[in-house]
Length: 271
Image (cartoon, rainbow, N blue to C red):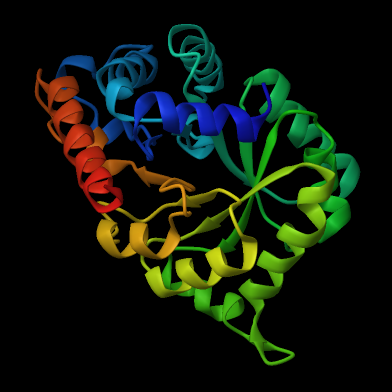
């Protein structure tokens, strides 16, 4: 099943546009797991199982695993998601961006080693750096467009031919790169007006929206600006607010409650 079709199916079957980000920080893991050699794996799988009923996707951030030498645990987590929750979309958040031959290795890492349905990439090096990802049939390439961090203004808002640079990225993705492979774009919830601008440019292409929860993005404004006519179109990510809802033995139950509440808040806007 292609990325776009799998995502549409996930939206439909889960009745959710929530994505749970897996950013395991060893210093914030429950006390009961600390000191365990496979603590990251156990924590993430518990979170996945607890929140699957409220989410359409999971998004492990590779840096949190690589920094701890936990790539093998990430492989097992990804395999678990594919096997135990096959209808959920698996996004590897890697933000890769390099020349073509190296990009192909990164694409292999995301789609073969980790078996992700989609991967985040940086468009700064242009078409030849993105095309190796796009050429993987059935896989999704999620391009950074308007990111949620304040520093994104340094370049993304620069005026080029009378338009902000991020809008040029959006047009390139919608009009060219999506004709090569299956695309989506990253647009931060901290800039809901710009979510709407990107939506107007790219039509019904999916938008991965970070910034909800700990980063302060507003759910209602984001959904109203970015949802499609069908009431979907968004992959709204929440990481820390879900992962660290509790540091006690009830961490999975607390994560489930936050995920359900966030799912319901998103759903209430689209009803």
